[in-house]
Image 1 (tube, rainbow, N blue to C red):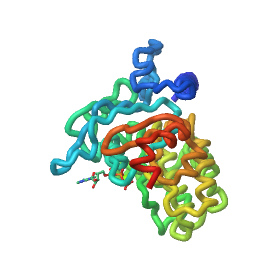
Image 2 (cartoon, helix red, strand yellow):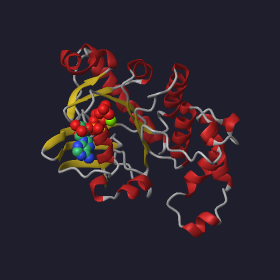
Image 3 (cartoon, protein in one colour):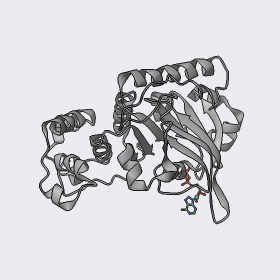
Image 4 (cartoon, protein in one colour):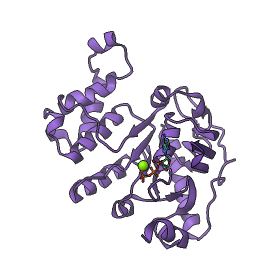
Length: 293
Ligand SMILES: Nc1ncnc2c1ncn2[C@@H]1O[C@H](COP(=O)(O)OP(=O)(O)OP(=O)(O)O)[C@@H](O)[C@H]1O
Ligand SMILES: [Mg+2]
């Protein structure tokens, strides 16, 4: 993503935050027609409409039960969006829909303003630049930190090209940069199996970063972490913000407080409230279904 588009994204977040601070409930349609007419280069995601991800009226039922119910939501380029909500609200299912794991019954899901994600398969969506982190770390325990990161570059390539795979200098630079970002520069030759739970989570995030995703979806990234690991993860996400767009689902409110700009509260498969953490925490409906328990 180019700096001017990230600036646009940042401006859009600032505008939204200003509206929210003024007590105006900024709707998802805000800025929808604000095109700059910028020509998009190939391989880039077209974010000239100020959003990297756009969901409208998305619904999905499982055996007659509406897990996602007319869900509409959008995310600006470079934004770090927090998603909270009670168990069963549909947070993970929403990520399943964005990543192509689950097909919605109806609705619109766009990556930028031109890529219709519902027309793409799961592997293609990953290739397009959407990385997903599941709750449980899934690193290769028998390989070193370095080998795990290296392997992340080989995925989706044929067996033959993997066998002869060598990091080029840009990839080596990227790997070194990622190691520092995920706080594992001192552990490059350690077996992933010997890392702490938190370090494994960071390594998996590092593996996603090797692919330079435009959008990262993180489902309960700090569950099971120590307080110190949680604090370092907050730091990590704040570093990633701006360079990538992030959607973070978490139940840990002190973590959300550290990283959040706009918080979206999901309940019964749709958006119940949205705003700053202070605003949603003061919302009676949110207290009733989630925070007041
Ligand atoms: N593949 C599926 N088949 C049937 N029901 C499903 C499926 N996936 C999700 N559900 C149901 O959809 C609802 C939403 O589940 P989801 O996992 O998205 O909630 P969540 O907000 O992620 O909750 P939690 O905070 O506990 O992780 C739940 O009632 C769940 O049982
Ligand atoms: Mg979940």
